[in-house]
Length: 173
Image 1 (cartoon, rainbow, N blue to C red):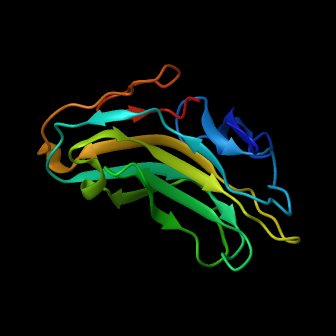
Image 2: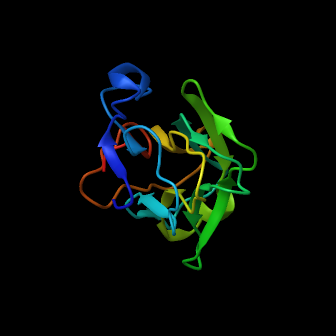
């Protein structure tokens, strides 16, 4: 992807600090993201066909995020709804600088069920003219039915992503 997104690990965090598990993650820039980013840059998943999905669904991922307050810099997690529009399930508010990976979970049921073109994306930017952080480090993204009560199947439909377990990927781009 553009805007600094890469696959592997942020070399300033190292092979251990830059991933949650395995040997790779997706991340924005080695070191801190730049000032004056004029737009949001996204890392976007392939399309998942969730036409026959039902039940309660959770989007889970491991993140190590450093970003200035949303008054200045912006980080997002968005999902594509059944109308084909992007819906924000996370946006930063205050400044944060995770010292390690933390698992985050969002309920995405209303976006998943019956959606033939479900996608997930992580975004960074716009940024102002001063103060930068490490940005996104994302690993082990998982879309799963809560308590395994969901029905139907959905698969990654684009090459370059690995299915690991039920609707998961180890941050391949």
